[in-house]
Length: 409
Image 1 (spheres, rainbow, N blue to C red):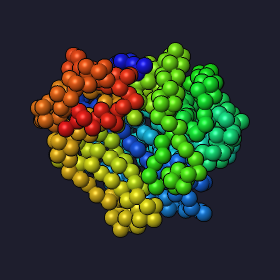
Image 2: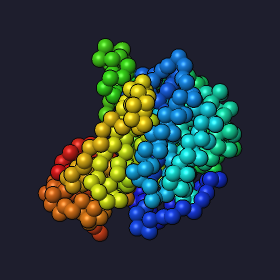
Image 3: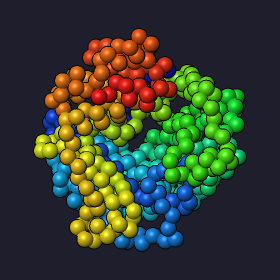
Image 4: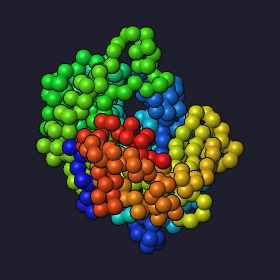
């Protein structure tokens, strides 16, 4: 079941890159997201901002990312970074020297908390795994592996470039080089039985990593899988079977000491992703690189949502023209902020503190939530409200989207 997560229990693995900047005594540290948009190939289930290019001018991209970072830092200085996340695309395709340059620049601009979490997403392909030692030396202290399956047939279906043997090797090599390792698995594939998933999840848990991201296969608009489903080339798992696999996931992961602290993310207490918790707790974060989003709101002024140009070439042109890749900065009304805080926070096992959201937005609770809908859903055991906290129960987790649509105003 989804755990009652204790936010005071976080004990992060320290980075080799540490300094003691001037810190804001009130506001929590910032998070920084760096987007690397390139992949070797486009997976058929993926709707992320990823692109395939024949070649990449690393020097040009280094200068562009540094310029984008400098602009964002000029607007968010005064608070250190508590986490950095290299996402994509496939960030493990970045030369480790580029990662090191970006981390050096981030440290100069903001400063780092002593226990900063620096995560990089990586694929299990051998050529990328061979970079793990250099990435660790660059300062990365947490890696998130896109394993997706430990079965070669499933990996072929998912369009992945690695096989099951490479996936297993990548996990072991990552554990040797990084203090913290997570990896992703996708379940509820067409034809996947409960026994198959139980066996695979058992093997995944046996690796002993402290974090797993376990996602049901969803058919996203605009993906190749959506086209294949529409053409009748395959039929997704039905909802009842997917729910059975979800129950297996909660049971096995919880028994192994990795309860769900978010809908699809499982961790030992203290090993939750600090960076993702910033999103889910609606903290401030800077985003640089093509398509990256950000939120600036807690340091005074008008809260805004930031978005970079999505297409790599358009982003590069914006950098050359403006010295930043911003496409827009959208002011956030109190209603916008309240809605976003609820939609993100109710994904967490800990739920949301309604009074805290009211204080941040200036909105009374009756302008944030539908109390009548909450009472009705609580009567069905789908949500709970106690001690000022509202949360979706384990029984309601499978109906999360529908529940959010009813209770969030």
